[in-house]
Length: 217
Image 1 (cartoon, rainbow, N blue to C red):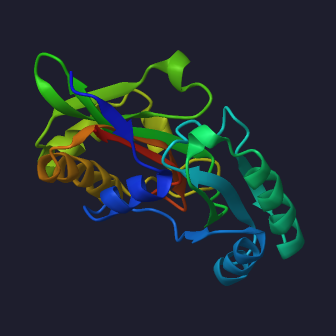
Image 2 (image 1 turned 180 degrees about the vertical axis):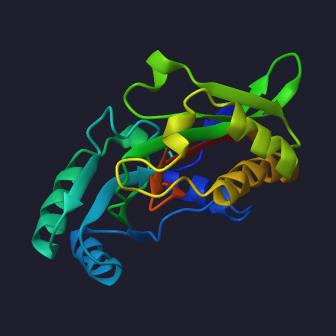
């Protein structure tokens, strides 16, 4: 197995978005004042994260601040996050993004099967994801029909219909996510794995609010 490394969240999203995976409108900022200005441009509330090539697990390290409602809150959160950077993180920036809300979360990604090769994955996300284990896989490349079949094979179909006052999941948009992952794997042989977790369903449309791509070093 060759050595691998992870891309920053921003670079991971940029790579996957180039193949059609939808991501939120985000900005990188070098300091707290620039983060506040970016938040003003995006519109409140926002999320601020510490971003860098050496940062793979932001939530576990407390490097995410959610629901920041004004510029003062963004400056305070940004200052805290920059203070948490370690030498192992390398060069860091602040990632400012809109606060995407939705009551349903999916997960999607790419994973290498040691016997068969690269696969596209789709599953139910959220706090019960591991307990439910509702995941389907297909070998790369996939077609639109394959992607539709993957959606149909999820056991938790009730989450895909109208739910808690929200519209049904836009299946065409979800198919586009899966096709985008497959296309990325075909086009970029460096990719070892990719995780879109969570893929929040906002007004019926899936949006990747976090992404991590692992590539060969």
